[in-house]
Image (tube, rainbow, N blue to C red):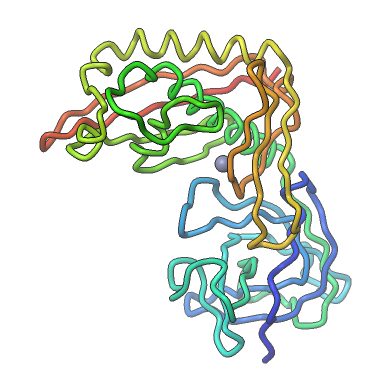
Length: 293
Ligand SMILES: [Zn+2]
């Protein structure tokens, strides 16, 4: 068995829905499934370090594998030091650690006949990808609109977001989950955020906040602004950014996910909030819903 020593080349940042590559390694997993490592792939893997966007769905097809097409059961970021393969949260190192290769592990049924050396075509489920890309773009826009709405809630200077507003989203985020045509962001407002100057009373009227966020989103969607993923190094660990030309200027946010190409893909984006108070902290959940045009 030979494990790849260079990162997987990834085509999903540019929006690819298909790729053709070679099986560099097949590894049997303890649960009876198998991990297929390709030199190049269109499949977006879930990253255990920040699992916001789920794995793509799709198939792997090879002329050498009579049971093709093989269903892609999962796609996860994996790490290898050349001697062993670690999937997802089993990885002992952070993505980008020197001396390690970071790979897209395509998880398939262990009965599949795909093997090392096979040439494999990856086909991504286009509707599921579109819906996740739309949800991810909507998520970024909603967080920027929320930051802008809460700009007056800060009594001290804090780090700002890509549009210049105090970055509530980055400072309070607990988890972010991209879903088809939407996202769920959970924010926690505890002692440390108050110390940084955030006034929790600014969250008293969440309906009014939702109305203001929706107003900003409506104005942004109406511009049909172009959006894209900048991906100068098309490998799994390459630095990537989501870029969008909003009315007040271009915003750029580091992001490893997939996105739609322009805001004209949306009919509307709107948010709703839920609040939970426990143990002296406020938890606010923002649900973002996007409607395709
Ligand atoms: Zn993102």
